[in-house]
Image (cartoon, rainbow, N blue to C red; front, top):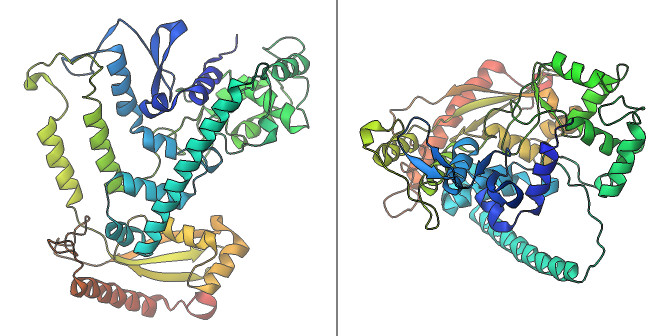
Length: 443
């Protein structure tokens, strides 16, 4: 029989309460346990769980919380990994939310991302307005549903979908009818042709995707074998559709496939890209959160020597060391692989710079008009990013910008100007070396 776990997990996710979504798990009555909303792991109530490598024990609810933070990171990052169609948030808004959640001040955010303090304040305002609208919409929908007596049940959209439109407006009865129609010999197959109409195609793909297990990696050959049972002639087309519609994800070289979950990147085995400082702070908060909760059973603590993980003091020391590392300043190159032209830039903070440049180019507002014109003409996939050189420093250029601000939090203009002079001098050196002028570049 087909595995229905992926479909039921999507349903639980969309029907979970706001509190459950923030926690990352919910209690499932018919299974008498706590289910992770990310991967579907179930922890039965009444069972005691031992922490891996430690002589400590949690009850089911507390272990579910531990599991979410340990295996998936923060729920904030998991939710931010969802597509814009699901959250309504742009990429820049997501980055701002990460910075706000990490407790970064406006000046710190400006230094990290560019722009101005007024722009950061505007983002704060817009997000708060979105939150007000969301609260009102939830209240309106609850009032509407209170008066509904015969509301049709819709098949839940898979959480990793990059498309959310009318093609997914499938009621449960419609879905069952389509499966009977396109799998006339039974749900195991074969498939009676790939539907041309989008809604029917979504129903067929959803059913086929249920035969793949969350958490397992499949080679291309294994995927092909599973799909040939449905259509020996069109299995390659089905495989492509499963990826295009977000039911499966794969490595760029096609060597591995898996059922995508929220909070994962293209390799499917690690968190999506986030700013290093922001990620460190949030992971520290998540680790601390997993140890608290008035309603949760206290862990049975054993001597520190028996524990395999770092204690609180060690984590704090590691975090401090992480934040005090050196900030990279230097020169970078954006190359148009289609015609060989290059753009040379310089920055006092190289972290996340390529993402920032892509965002500005995507908006159509890059300062270099020729580069912007080619970006629109050739497309993002034709451009590459490379760090050419970095400023050699004595280790005082800190990642947390404490070298730039004084003890009162005021910017030391002389320090900032000095850094800019250094990177511009390095940039001039590379401009002279590469001579990216005329047909060779964008200068």
